[in-house]
Image 1 (spheres, one colour):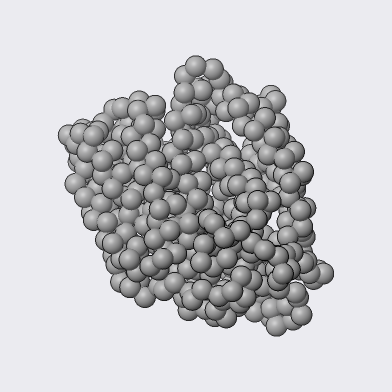
Image 2 (image 1 turned 90 degrees about the vertical axis):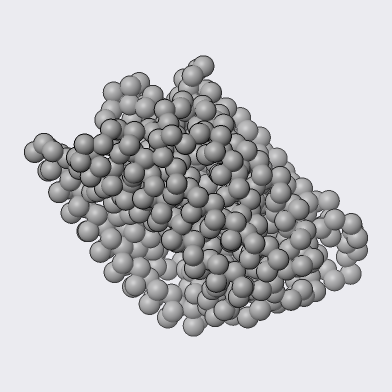
Length: 505
């Protein structure tokens, strides 16, 4: 039987009575992991704005350029499910150094890349490191932080996952307007190298490891399953396009075939992957132990988080298209519109965490779900005459609702597990976010493209057609939010246990 993950601190250690109950060296480790995760996610969100510049500079097509984001998403989808095993098989220090080394190497390759092919390779290497960072952060946090203080620490995690996606496009737009696309990587590289060096010095082994061998068949099935689903979902937008020429029709046919094949392979491989894990977990050798779902509270929280991710990532993708395509604002203005909402999510995170620690989930989840749903329904009224200030205020309100939801969901889901399963739970959280986010983006872009194309064929202007497509896409997000209003009442805060003791089962 594999050993439970526990801190290296003995029961006789005296812990500080203030704040989170962490010793100074433990706080440094968590802050370092927060910083590394911030840099990794920041890098992930900078590429979208840079694609038009890369098309011109590298002489590539828009379809080729899209692979810079698709390859990143695919790698994340393949690596994240494996992190549960990696975090139990190797020490915290080994995993951190590996993750930051991969991320730094990928960033260096991207900075020096002479052409498109090597740039795609660089994005894959970067994504391999990025995929490990959030599960590592979550697992370390759950291992070190006592249950009564986890909410406020998860609130700090919300700063990372909310500020980075908003600052990324804004920073990218500024660098592209003033310098070149290489500086996107040039700014990130020294920060990553410093994080790697400091982590190698500060991070020590925080728990015991297992000796279980990695199951190669599970890795293959995981790659085909999650990779196939994410790739297939990424093709949905293209298959929904309306082409009038023979070339457009042929491209649409190829996209549709690719979509069906990818989703079919993904679903079959995922089914086989689940079957394989159910067998291996009986002897504690699973790549991704699915016994985490025996906790009803964990399962409910993960379902709620998945629906939120569908709406959040879908809206995060559609809003910039609406602002630039319908309202005609610049890329930099688009980033500034998103900034107030990101600041609200980030700055309120620690406060929301403290409220969770004191009062539990319902006081946050119920109003948060209603605020987010109401904001999404209001989004469906946006048209070509909507003020940019209306969009900014609405997105800020949506961000508040999301902030009140994500922090308690993260904390309640992982807090429902025993320490032995923290790494697997963190991997499940990352995987669900990745797949659900891809599904939300694919679904909303497909609906937007289909409705926009139909409106254009009916004689609507470009702005009117874009507004119609946007409204339909936002309607999907609003409908997805409705089950959240019910689920918010059923997710509870796990009872506080002594530090390191099992929580849930």
